[in-house]
Amino acid sequence: MVKKKYELLAPAGGFPQLVAAVNAGADAVYFGLKEFSMRVNAKNFAIKDLKKINEICGDRVKKYLTINIIVYDEEIKKLETVIKKVKGKVDAIICWDMSVINLCKKHGIPFHISTQASISNSQMAQFYTDLGAERLVLARELNLKQIKKISKINEIECFCHGAMCVAVSGRCFMSQHVSGRSANRGMCTQPCRRTYEIKDSEGNKLELDNHTVMSAKDLCAFPFIEKLKAAGITSFKIEGRSRDPRYVDTVVRQYRKALDKKLTKKEIEEGLVELKKVYTKGISSGFYLGVPTADDFSSVENSIATTKKEFLGKITHYYTKAGVGTMLISNGPVKTGDEICVIGKTTGIESFKIGRLEIEKQEVPEGKRGEEVGFKIPLARKGDDVYLIHRVNPEEQK
Image (cartoon, rainbow, N blue to C red; front, top):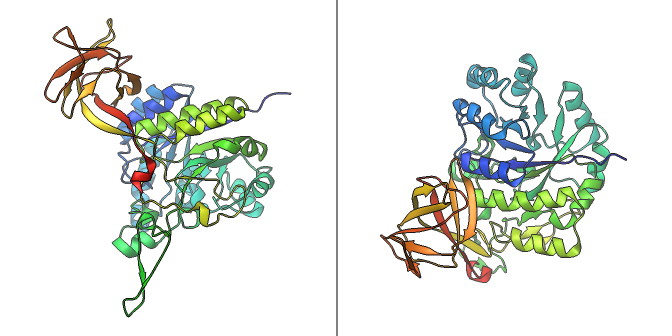
């Protein structure tokens, strides 16, 4: 029996995240351009960047371009120009607006249907398949039994990790009403994650146990990934085009292990410890195992990760043969034994502990703000950012 090949699909909001995803073992990446992106707050890419993206990804890692916003008449001409320019430079376009679909068909570009289409039944799946879609990203409101039935129709992509929108498959109008920034145009201000008080017209307040009444916990299918495999899912997608390279690196590495083999109970527990070190509002099984309950809502607006990164300074020199770099400390101190990470556009991310610190070739126990220190680094480049990783108490972040 031939073992089924699963695709691990990672987010790339910029070059550091892209390099991190590739180095961590992603099979494919998805990203947006500065135009027509559902994540305008991510750095995103320009069309001229596609050449470098292809060089980084090589033949091993597939590239999917997201054009999954609502498109207006006055934008069709510009949209067609973009689609013609990306032909042959991406493996597929993730979309759902019929104008994008029609242009993909016109210019012979493979397309995948976005979760924004809310495909939730076999007839919808068959409709888009008949249109020529090579893959369907299903609605996030489906359970595994429903997914398995639809998976018989076409190749299926589903989210396995990351933030969840409180609205149906992300098609929310709250940000538009509150701030005039449409989520369906990539400008969501995430008002659902904020803390709210409820009061009547006379000013009487309703006491709530949880003031973040619309803030969903993050999806984490890691503990039951085998059930997703059994449901017929081909591509396992990590949410997070607005997340930093450390998040991308950590999550990709853990899910790479989970897709390559069946993990033991101990390996799952160890993996969850690592996943909780990066951005999370708490973990949930989403709709996969049943309809979410009150326990699937977070008690925080932001992250309760067990570690945080704090900017230290920038790499001033890197000596390749010696594997040594120097850093000008902007925000110290930094000490021997500290856990740090180096992040750069070409470097991606390198995480390690400092074994020895030197100033002017003399060993020192710590470096202070304004000092230039040297230490062993696996890989770095001049101008890369350096961060200190320190542990935090999640309870203190609530």
